[in-house]
Amino acid sequence: MIKPTPSQTVGPFYGYALPFAGGGDLAHGGIVVHGRVHDGAGEPVPDALLEFWQSDPQGGLRGAPGSMRRDPVTGAIIGRHGLDFTGFGRVATDADGRWMLRTLPPGLPYISVCVFARGLGHHLYTRAYLRDEPGDRLLAALEPSRRATLMATEERQGVYVFDVRLQGERETVFLDFG
Amino acid sequence: MTQERISAEIADLHEAYLKEGVERHHSARDFAPYRSSALRHPHQPLVVVDDPDAAELAGPVFGVTDVTALDADLTRQHQGEPLGERITVTGRVLDRAGRAVRGQLVEMWQANAAGRYAHQRDDHPAPLDPNFTGVGRCLTDDEGRYAFTTIKPGAYPWRNHRNAWRPAHIHFSLFGTAFAQRLITQMYFPGDPLFRYDPIFNSVLDERARQRMIAAYDHDLSVPEWSLGYRWDIVLDGPSATWTES
Image 1 (cartoon, each protein chain N blue to C red):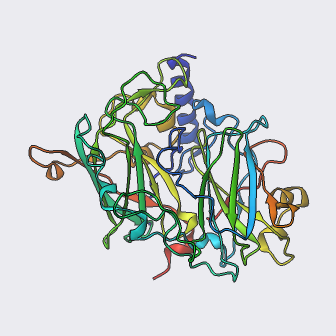
Image 2 (cartoon, each protein chain N blue to C red):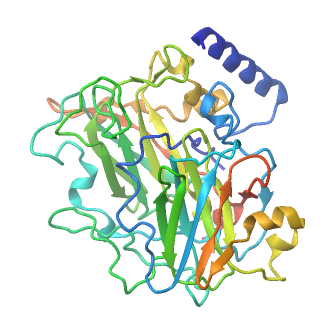
Image 3 (cartoon, each protein chain N blue to C red):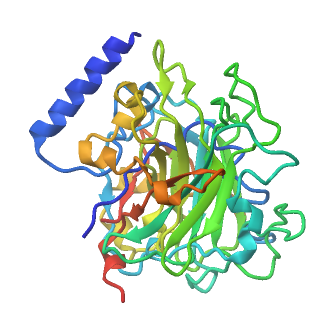
């Protein structure tokens, strides 16, 4: 085994580089997942970047290229063509620490989330569970109060809320994939 | 907050790391000299996921439609030439088994030669360059190679403490073959006098790991009358499950 390159913070000035038009719009006519990112004082984090990766409605994890598809003539981002499901989303939080994802309901019970932010030297993984599955290995291993931090709340039909708390009371469960 | 105080904190934390005797590869999430980390790191230990069917063991997919030919040459994205020292940066993306990571998206972004980002909230009084935005993308080739042509970014002040200046660096964002291999890091330039003063660079506690963030000047990569060459290989960490695939 060779040793990995260390992680560093995404910093505050990624905004002109990483987010792309339609980054949170994986698909229309499906579900909406939205929420906020909070720091340890409960304040919104306005310079976080969230990435999402999920299965398609059948549970497949093949994805498809074309999340940030470019126009070959102008170089402009022209976005997804809307037929293939890419499974990948990228959203910067706004001034209130809010983000939103439009997507299809995943076949697996969760959407994988990767959190970057100024002040965060190494990104964090978590999961937004849209339903509680008794057989899920991760959920089953957590005590109820911790498990609750991974559960999105369905605020109305097809609209889910999932907040990320980087620290403190109700701190989100963050994951290690070894 | 003086540099002396920040430097003393860095020295104490590096010494404590050596005493602990456990090798850590990544930036500490809780690194007090980097003041922004105070309220943004979890207190609870991470929960290990041991599930061979986890979604994170597959990865987002990118392809040729996600990049255009000019994306890898940051000096040709505008009407005129950007100001600064033209450089080429190249290397290989590998996994921890040393295998090439092929056909994967590499993104990079940086400040201009004067140390200013093309970002509305960067109000550092250094000039913007109308011929430089500072964003590049490419896909790795069959040997895992990436290559960018750009200009050397400048150092810039950042208010973490009195006289805080970041060493010149280029941000890199990489995807491996699994979502759990995701990496955002910074490439530094050899011999920078600011290394010892910078809390972000030093948030990587291990000296050898810090060295892995520094590119090597490679005279054979320099192009006569044109550019200076730097070589920097990137090794993606990741779940053990992704190391053993054929």
